[in-house]
Image (tube, rainbow, N blue to C red):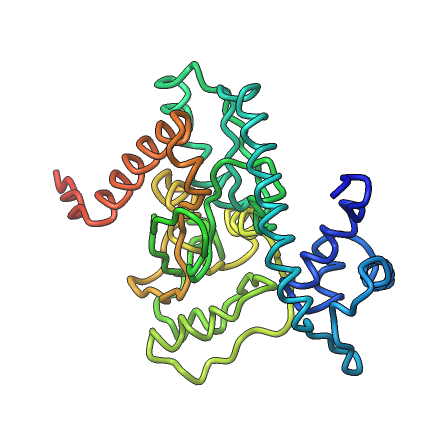
Length: 310
């Protein structure tokens, strides 16, 4: 077949996304275009091929049999093209390591430790990307992702790094140092809120107070780093993840209230495409990261230092 007879690459990429999601709206969100643009591309592709690829059922779409076969072949071809492009880029960026993680984990856990990696591997040019968007390794120029979630990431090399729990913290000067002495007293104190979770009710349930409702009013923080900063500034009591608040607790900028944890269904994961896991730069980062994780776990399980009573 003459390559000039192939459909446009943008049309194939649009079809692959729509087929994978079986949704024009989700494909539009992924590709940062409008629903109408996706629909137009699909109809133009169907006309060019002379066969329907999707069956329209009201606002829903599903692949036809021909669409299923074509989607499989198109995805394989696009993945092959992506692999070839990645291999070409490897020749120009073998020294560059791109690591993506959430903004809070990058700022509060990776950054305080990353100097040890840089000292050990000065030959690697490290780029830390702080984003709460999920990395798409077929599209984004990223080597390694540190994800916080339930797991189940398919078609990737995946390793569980850290389990997570949450607990309340505040500045030692909060309320002029008169800190809550019981979970019931904490329930009546100003609490800082995250906009995307319902963890306060989980923590109070673990504390034996299942009837304490989730706060509905106040300032809601979307980013954990901002939430932590507000707690450090004495604005209220925050429920924070262990990995995010460990440094501030160790330095005394925050104090933990009560030895009660709210369990989390999510964990931190090391993820990367399997071929990239074998590269020297990813292997170096992986080895360093696992050492840091082991050290962090050891601190969590170490017995408390006896106080000096002299």
